[in-house]
Length: 497
Image (cartoon, rainbow, N blue to C red; front, side, top):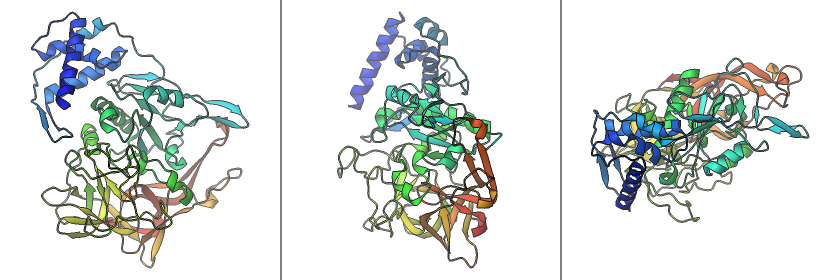
């Protein structure tokens, strides 16, 4: 099948070359126009971005392992200088204009999400704001759409639906922006995170990564993330570049409904390589912190429920490790009392995040045994396979926190809201509701950052009545389980891990 796919792709590329009236040259530089047409893009900017990426790979070389275990290598050819003027002869349209906020290296068009009233005090599908004058932007959230491109654009233009900042097309990485960066989109399922984040939706389905998570989309997404992060000073790490599946529920009742995209098949290691922040060791073998980093291609834990409930998914590389209650694959998986209040075990389901840690996430080490590492996770000790010959984590440095002396446990929150005294008249006090987890004495968790308690009050269509409430209470964000969480700074002590 891979050989047939390669031959089919070569035939299509050859057809594009013939349509352009160009010879089947042995010099790859002569194929720029055909590669641009091969992208399938109907605008010149997207076609050029796709072709530029292809020729970047040709110059730098690449090696990948197929799903069947075959190694495919492309030697680097750094001297290749493509004939970029061939693009002009393709007759492609120029992308639609508008107030886009994208780097010059990304093909981006304006497809606005509607900001309009539709009766009974309802409006959609985002809020006007004045970020960063009013609030800092601290997070970038990576989603997949669980829909095709046509459906994705239809949904974001529906005033009764939710919204997000950017959509990225799978086939060629084309970007559509829907909401200005200064405004607040409704994408994360957590209002605190919405108010302080930018959301990127990637066309596709998490159970079909090879069909949807394309190299063109990864590369364009990484350029866009670098641009947003540079503009707002967002650190390029997994404490600030979150998957939608890393965003916490806000209350106990909301945990079960939180999203699970982009899932265990999203290649975070490759993504951070493209971001210019490869995940590498930063400490010695006895470090108190580890960062999850299996080899994506060869690490293939069994997942179920991709197509049929209870049936195994097609074997595939994954950036996530599975967590057990003891150093044995025969031991039960760790439990998530938020997902399953009745105490049921976690499962191997592709959408079950209860016993999963993903590439780039950092955790405090609880114990090490031959070939296994235990981390503190959701208030318990969780073990994952980490053999020396095929490590699934790298040793790291980082700040960690633990309950203050004298406290047996401290509460954990899904949002960092201000204390009651911070709210002005006319703004209802938001409850600071703890999640059903406990951070126990003696346990340590890696600190991702700190933030004052904040609440963006935006109940009406008219933004003149919107208010940012900021309190004195400080919070730390931590990597608590597969999702991040928040604890009050007054409850914990911070040290170097």
